[in-house]
Image (cartoon, rainbow, N blue to C red):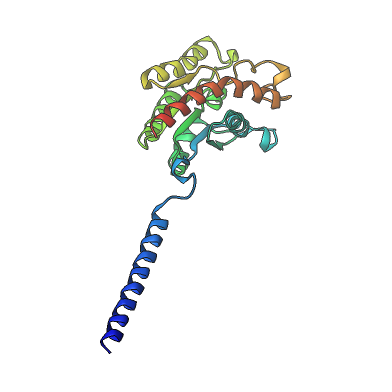
Length: 229
C-alpha cells in the first residue's frame, strides 16, 4: 500500500514535470521571432505631394512620377513605398488645405512639388512662399523630412514676376536646410520630345527624365532614414 502511494506520487511528479516542460516550450515558441522577422524592416514611406506634374496628368497610372520613382528605387534594393498625393490643378493654397489629412499616412519623407499653378495664375509670390512655409511646418511637426522641388515662372509673366517667383524655392530650401531639387522639370520643359502636346506636362519619357534626376536625392534620404532606424 505504501509502495502504491509512492508510485502515485512519483507518477504525479513526472506528469507535472511534463506539463511544466510543455509550458516552457510554448512560452519559448511565442517569444522567439519568426525566421527573418528580427531583421525585417518596414518600408520608408514617401509622400509625393504636388499637382498634375506629380499626379501623372495625361498618363497611365503606371507612368506617373510616384510609381516610376518607386519602381526605380526598389530595383536598387531600397525598401520604399511612394504614395501619389498629386492633384491636378492644385495650388500652394490647395496644398495647405489638404496637407493635414495626408499626413495621417505617416510619411518619413515628403517630396514637396507645388507652385507651378500659382505661377501660371500669377499668384503673388509672397503668398506662394507663405503657403509653402506653412506646409513645411505642418510636415516637420510630424517628424517627417522634406525634399523640396523648385519651379520656374513663364517668361510671359514679365521679368519682375519671374524673378520674384523663381527666387522663392532656393530661398526656402536655404532657410529650411532641406534637400533641394532646383527645377522639377529640369531637362523636360520646352522640349517636345519629353512633353505632352500641351507643351506643359511631361510625357512618359519626360517622367523618366524627372525620376532620373530626383531619385539620387531620395536614395540619399533613404540612407539617412535607414541609418536612423
